[in-house]
Length: 321
Image 1: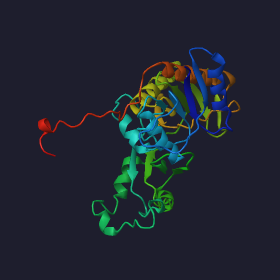
Image 2: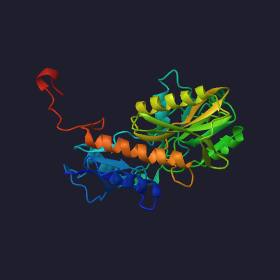
Image 3: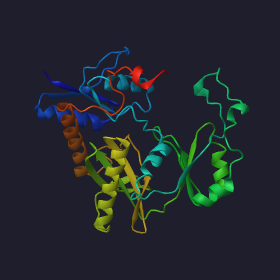
Image 4: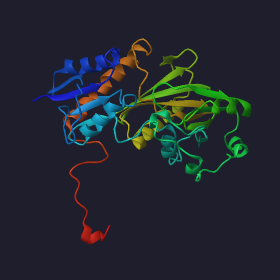
């Protein structure tokens, strides 16, 4: 019986079509790939897929529910649906525990306004609900800690969101005052001498490319870069993705003063297309992802998180609840 692999992805994008084609062309090991068909979600239900590659659930919430139910069965989901990968600030906090991974200084700022329309009309946050919040904010201390220029962006990353470079306090306030109900993240700006992007697959394989933000293009020419810098970026990208439990991710580094700073830890949408990447790089990513998916399909690995069945609590040992 064939082991089925499903892709939750935009059917108009060439990347997943090419990976699906690569898996199916191999015709070995009984693994076949296709786009997922997602019906209504039944509590306690299962999925016909041994592996699902997720490219859409961060922006399509219904798919997230399906993937969590699938992961409770025998399906392995890339990336782990039990990890909230959209929380950009939390990801920085996790990686901060690694003393040998240089990160820019960062802090989270509370929402400018508190009533989020997505919570519904019946949810209204009153001033009395915010008694735990220290207010007004210590802007003098915040600025002293981060410095200028700085980067202001949403603390939650879903899709392509604006990132603002602010050079002084009035600019910071102008953008922060427009942020509405978003929790914002203020980050030290690292002036890049070189920008590197590391594509990490299967928490084991890394491809590093130069990135030109102004031209929005990639290059595999490292002739003017110290090879040890590239290797350090690749090593740190692996550590980051192991810590965050990501099988498919892109981590961005700004090299300054001979140090690769991890300035953007998570980009699960992986800016991948044959038009934007060097030919050999695109080929490496598509074939390596096919390798990873086939390897997981043939294994008995499961996502870290909640698994069933869950043993009942031993109330005799734990005492009354």
